[in-house]
Image (cartoon, rainbow, N blue to C red; front, top):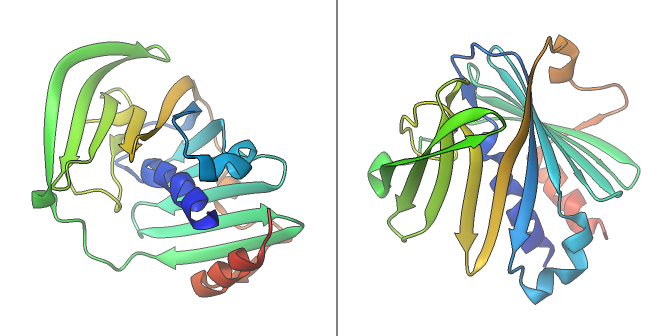
Length: 216
């Protein structure tokens, strides 16, 4: 069950890559769920209801609280393609840095359909995009061209023409939606993209073993 729970959480990380940034500030999201499977009932209180993305030049940072037991931040640098995951859970503070050396997802496995539908999200005019893979999974994204161009190694290298203000996915009847609620232009200190004091560095493998041993 824990693996299922964390697979749900990591589906949010599609927002972590930013390229050609001409915006500095924060974007707050609210997160909603529908038709969660019964086996996830014990983790329902841990599912994040809000998320915050910080953007500065080639840097981005996602901040999420998962109940009172766990806080997780993910920092991404689009120039070096490196990620830094910061986990604060059950009294442990762990930092895991990785560099993505894998190939980009094959764009031919996906079809992008741009719709004429428009809606305003957090004051930004957004257009609907539907990304469908060969397994017929659909990802609905509402894109604004007034914020940085979207880039991410977890999805194909397809030009979406802007930044996703809303992202939703359905899987086995369960749906997850992230919707921007507020956008604030402001100066972000460089320290937001570094490892805070008190965090212990671990490899991804060590982190995986540690998470297996944690009981939430």
